[in-house]
Image (cartoon, rainbow, N blue to C red; front, side, top):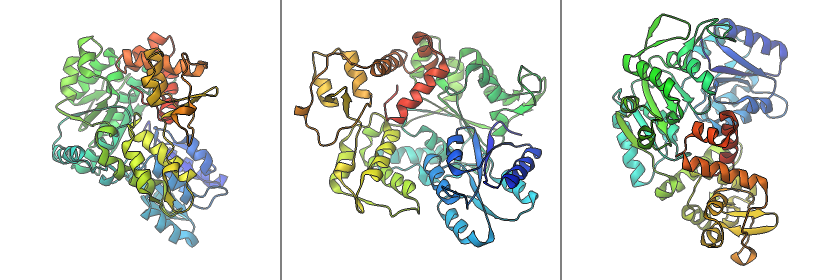
Length: 473
């Protein structure tokens, strides 16, 4: 039935096996784990739904649900509970679970819940938080264009919330009750992307043990979101063009055409016009995808959104597990004045740090640990002083401004000494990656080739940088 998978979290081994067998027999791919900690490790972009027990040793299902909602607010979560914890399950639904099942239950109940919620979007329209006039206008425009089936290409820097905007458009459309299927075109190895998008028949290639539908089929009657579309190879672009143009798909290894009723949304942080001019992206496909262009501004250009998004992140990370703290005026001022090179991803990191560092019921200015101060083997320098250091090579200066090594509290410019060259290999590696990405306008495949590393290795390193809040082109 699907390439996406259902994650089952159950510490009773016999029940876990029964759940997996039931779902597998009904065409679902299933991953099972025995505790919440392993569930968080298994949580990746291939997971389309979660079934979780509530009572487990260590982290319970309720806490797991709040953690998942903080990371992936759109992921449907169904809790499994014994009769005595129904009240807790109801509370969990108020905090983001889509449903619950009371044990013991029939296999048909489990399958029915899977069919209802699998690959559905569990987020609300309010997940696209706006307060700035620029994004308020964008949201109004998104609501209007959602009523049509026009293809939309969303542009913007990494971490600005392009997928959140795409999900908002889907939720505002008449397809809202149908699947929203997202795929990151840069995160899938080149040899697998075609099969992931279009599906394949059994035996179509080595390792194809059974027939699998592609993402387009999974999105039937709903919406498919093609993230980082600018990273797709030209050969695959030609096949995608035919699918978008003819509204039909042919699985690898099959001669049967499958008619599609799918709306296509896409996004890129690559300069698409430049990519077209140098032959890296097909112009005809660009115009098919770019029927209605939308640009999401970086966070630094919408300061009022910083306050609103920070409040939403606080609410999401606190959930019902702790009292949501206040944010002091000085702390909020510090957030607003920062340039946020890592956009919302970086803001999310800073909010989580503040929740760890705070004392009492208010986040103070000293709890806001920003990624603008670095330590390299004892020598320290702020991002501002780096930009003012004429003696430092400009490329190194740029990389160091964007590389997070360590944050130092209560530091002043007098504490720092300029370095002419970075002293550790990790910093130099980061410089090379960022500079090469910049030279290639963010194109991952070309960057990997220039660095003589595999695209998979590059994606891993970029993911690690983004976790640190580094602005990646």
